[in-house]
Each structure stands twice: as structure tokens, then as C-alpha cells.
Length: 222
Image (cartoon, rainbow, N blue to C red; front, side):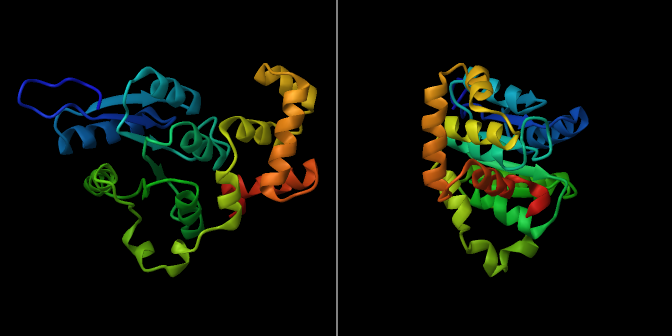
């Protein structure tokens, strides 16, 4: 864990709160500071800042993500973070209470889905559960048998590498191989190889089918 702590005390927990609303970050941070001793809170306003914070700190105990902040692209951001930093548990704190969205978030690797409308004490308790190695969902979701059924597309997407997820994101934005190569600073041959691997892993035959499949990432389509 990050932070040496004082002699005879537990090392500090390091928690990244990624949300584009400063007031939300402050409220969550305050709730965590009150509930946990010696916690270090790192704020991020978008996915890029969250990634930078993950790279900057030697050890991060928990990443809190807002699905709707810049850079997330629905579930693409969640899937890419889980692929790049598999040892860091991720908790989604979101304004939505849609059961389908909650289930999909867990399928894509989140350890918790906590509605922002929940009391701060409930949010802090849910996040503590994640730190204890548990998976947390709102009480009304716990009896939903469907939430335990894995989604085949989610399983296939989980097999994509972080770079392949980036390529898929750019494909879904309508970019050509040359444009993708420029944005990722790689050769076109490398992009073609990634596209071929993506098609195989997703079980589709064309770029168009891959883009259609990528719409499963969109919160609006679940």
C-alpha cells in the first residue's frame, strides 16, 4: 500500500476518485476520510487523469470511476482500466440505477456499483466492502439471479488487450487505419494486425460488425 504511515500504525490507503464534478469528488473524499483512518485521496477529472494517477502511485488500493465522465466512452474506459491495471479494484459510483447498467459494469470487471443517490455513509460502507475483497451491489440487486449470468460479449471483450481496446474505440469513431496508426504512434501494419485480432476475439467478420458489436459498450444501449 502507498504511504509508510507512523510507527505502529497501518499504512495509509490510497484511493483515486475519478469524477468530472469537483463537488462529487470532495463529498466522496470527505466521506472516506471520516470512515477510514489515514486514507490518501487522489482526485481526477477524467479517465486520462485517472490513468496518470495510477501510473504515478506505486500502489493504489481502490479506483472510483464515474461512467459518464470524459474519456470513459461507456464501458470502454472501465474495460481498458481493468485490462491495464488488473490488480486495482474498481468501484463505479454513478447517477444511474438501471439494473442492466449495474449488471454490465460487474461483467466488465467492476467490484461495486454504487448509486450517487445513496447516503454517504452507505457509499463509504460499500467502498470498504470492496477494500475487504467483496463485490457490492445495491440491496435491490442482490436477489436478481440475472446479475450472476455472465454476458458472452463481455467475456469476449475481456480477452482484448488494452491496445486492442483503444483500436476498437477508434474504429467505432469511424477512423481509418492510417488515422488510428497516427493517433497511437504505431505503423499501419500493426493496426491491421490489431484489427484482425479484434475480429477473431469478438467472433465477427468485418470492421462494420466489430463497430456494431462495440455499441454494447454504450450505456444507452444496455
